[in-house]
Structures are given as C-alpha cells and as structure tokens.
Length: 306
Image (cartoon, rainbow, N blue to C red; front, side, top):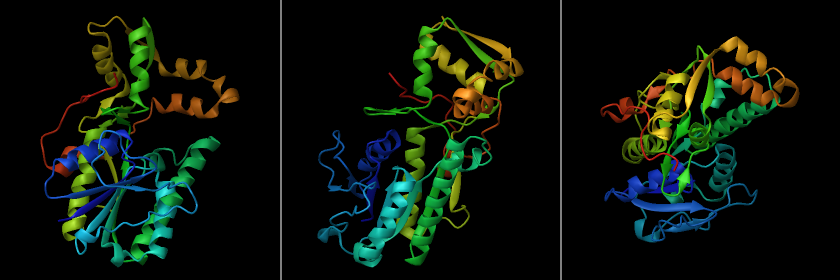
C-alpha cells in the first residue's frame, strides 16, 4: 500500500489533501509538522519544525509498512522544506525510509514576479528559485522522483483553514458601497485549495506507482479551470458577498488608478507594484481539470471564506 507523508497539513490545501487522502482506502497516511492537525487526531503524526536548522523527523518509516513506497507531499513553504529534506536525506538514506518521490508546492510568483522592481518581491523570487534548485538537486542526487507545483492565486477554505488571498476581499465587498476597479484589468486563473490538493494527490499517486508522468514538466505551473479578468473575478465574488449586490464596482481608467497609487512608491513599493499587477495577465497555466482529466469547474468553488 503506497504511503503519503504530508507536510503543511494545517494550510487550506494541505488540509484538503489530507481529507481527500483519508477517503482513499489504497493509501497509508502520516503527517509531519509542528502540531497535529486538530481535525485529524487519528492520523499518525511526526513532530517536525521545518524552519529549525536542526529539524529532523524522529522516524519516517513505519515498521508495519516497510517495503511500501513512500511519497512526501508538501504544502509548507518550499524554502523550509528544501533544506530540511537535504539534511534528512544526508542523515537517513532514502532507501531506509522507502522514500520514492517528493511533490512540493512552490508558487507562481517565481515566474510572475521575476522582473519585479521592488526588493521584497525580488528577494521572494530568489528564495523560491534557490529552494526549488536545492530540492531538485537533493532528489536527483538520491535517485528520487520529484515534482514541483507552482500554483497561482490559491483561494478557498478547507476545515478551519482559509486562504490569505481572495478571503481578504470578501469583507470589503460586503462593507463598501463603492469599489473602484481599473479598466482594463488583466487575466487571472484562481485555483481552489481543493483543486490544488487533488492535483498534488494525483501526482503523488503517480510517483508512488511508477515514477510520474513523462509528458509533464517537473516544474509545473498550475491554475484553476476558469480564466477570467480581474474585474470579472471581483464581480462573481461580489454577487456572493452581497446576495443582491449592495456593493457597486466602478470601472476607472487604469492609468488614473496607477496615478492615484503613485504615492505608494514612497511608502510601500511592494503595494504599488501589486496595484500595477491588476492590469497584468497572470494566467496561461495548466488547468487543474486537464491534469485530473475531469470536467472543468467554474470559479468560484466552495467553500469560501466565511
């Protein structure tokens, strides 16, 4: 029976992955992290603080499951996972754990913010790129299959865990009578945490049974099934938030919004660049339904932030 060891189970996508995997009778599960997921006390748990330089799981292998392939699936920050995995493999050879592959979530920011002008985003791209390179080098050195997912605009809720992207917009769309929206706006491809979980689980099963899919890139940018403008995305959320539309979205020429946001350059260049990105196309990634070979699911999927 293939085994999954899930890192980052206390994130929306990690929790969704754990819930989906629990329903699969063909998988043996374990979780590694700083705390046991409170909604899943029966799942075997290994304490592991990925951010600690000396972090190491006490044991990855379950004596009752020896000989069965193990795949690590991570929704934790890849810049913590990659050095941890390198240390773990140096201390405990992959064959002794039965480790066969790794599926790790990075971020599409490594692509979309590559040419950012502010220092924060440039540092983020460097951190992501270096972590991805270290993960790849560690896996290839130890003969492990690997897959890095670069999801874009993760949203939604799983259990008690909620995204930090679109969930922040919902209260504004409930409270504010008018919300300015730049016109035109760029394209987005938001992916629900349950979709990302299903993709990661699909790839993990493939690694556990045969080393993955040869026709997929090892670094895989992935998005949701709908590609829509930033304005249309807000309109759909607005209809849900207000149940009738008390908030009105006001199209404003993009140049005017950028001009009004110009003072942010002095206060927060990162936020100014975030305003500029509203006009950029951040889409064109592989849709989740293509990978999973199932009908597309329109945005937004539920559950959303309460």
